[in-house]
Image (cartoon, rainbow, N blue to C red):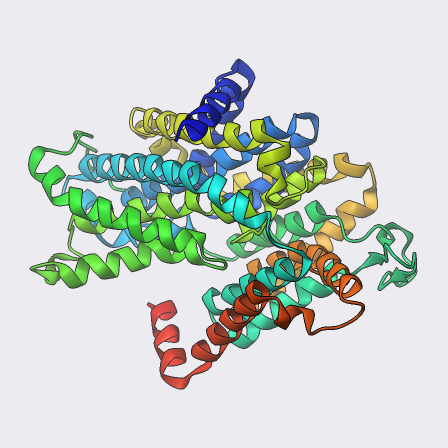
Length: 500
């Protein structure tokens, strides 16, 4: 306990510098903005802003990017409640009851409940990160190359099962990401692989080029084909603070949502996205009158919004302690760490304690900032919702092009980004989810490195992955997850859940 308190004092010392407070505020503000404006999302935004972080120190850069991620969860609820359009994928469930409350003249209460639930869940999730950080890091230091390889295999299996749509399509996306990660020069032999004679590919596919193309450009193309239809609530927003009766009804759902979202957020794949859906299902099943749901039940806002933010923050646990990204946004964070010369994994806490604990402390500060940013500025967010998409997207594309050119000052990078943008758009149209591909791409290089190290140590014997108990256990879990997901009854139920 004393050790954790000592680490937290170090973290607050880092997070409370003027520069890091400003970066945290900037991240939370941008995150709220892109959460409020449907059609961009944190993945695309972080991809676009990656080049800006090159001039920052690693701690400040990651504090800002983290603020964008969990800030988007707050902002997404504003759009869901006022416009009936989820600003973020995790806010889909909030539209069901949140918008109905707004139509009944209780928009302010819905927004206030969402903000308070999100703040509580975010604070609890940050406590969990602080509590689990040191034990998990010590455990991870016992891992060798074989255990790390098996852990990454298990993570990708979870990503396949928890991805939306067909398991086969998700598997194909993972494999495609792994294939992209092999492009470039082999570190051991010096031979070029899959470069097709293009000199700029000899160092591999640039992470920011792939991410910005598949998520930034492709997202713009996808949104341009959708007609603009916004059912903005015309009435007054009303008081923002929930009454005593509202608080009594919301308290238990907030606690349950925090627990559900916190657990699911750690899972690889779509764990953080599934949290709000799971919370809504639980609240509806245990309610005395389930018919209230979909008609303005405050529990349908409190539970999912708490799960939403708890999952967004506990997703940092496997990233910071094991170096394994559980979702696409965390994969971008791994990319940012790598760009700044930080090797993701348990060494982050031992070699860069100011980075680890500075980020943890900044999450408390960020949650407090988001409470202040969201509630008093609701009127401004409503005005922003009236900005037409056709005016936003050209600016986004120009910003993307400038950002990607500034990374290496190569015009070819812009062309590759546009190519990946068309490729990402094609994937979306064919029903493939690009997020697993990014996970495969980020983990590909690490997996290849750990595989080779394990085989060198075992003198080429693949039995090393089975002989070591932890490695064997992780592989068994990976196989069981895939087998269970492929069972006809489970597969049918999974399809029903994702359809809903």
